[in-house]
Amino acid sequence: MNKIEAIIRPEKLNDVKDALADAGVLGINVAHVTGRGAQKGIEVGGPRGVAGSYVVDMLPKVKLETVVKEEDTQMAIDIIIEKSRTGNIGDGKIFISPVANAIRIRTSEEGEIAL
Image 1: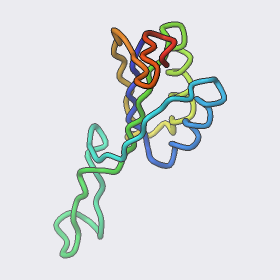
Image 2: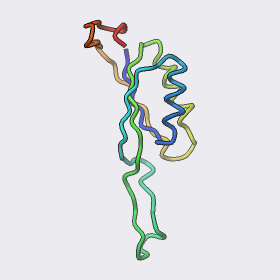
Image 3: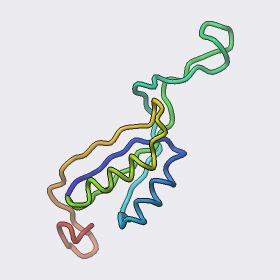
Image 4: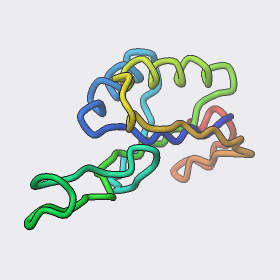
């Protein structure tokens, strides 16, 4: 099993969520976060140094997390990329981590069946 963490643009969340659900990836968690990377922020109010202008260097993003079977990992990654890519700086990042086990609290089922 693998955990997929994707940092994406907020306006792309519904497209990604719906496409993952259509592919059978139903269990996701979403958190609204702020951050920065290569995009480095945006200037608001005019050119730098002009009175009333400022730089917003922490931009709103969405962090989507899901755990999928090993064989579904690449499919989920491809969907996230396809549905969240604009081709511009700030499209986000995807991080993959191995998951040793998953346990469904209600039934104590473990492993992939718990997903």
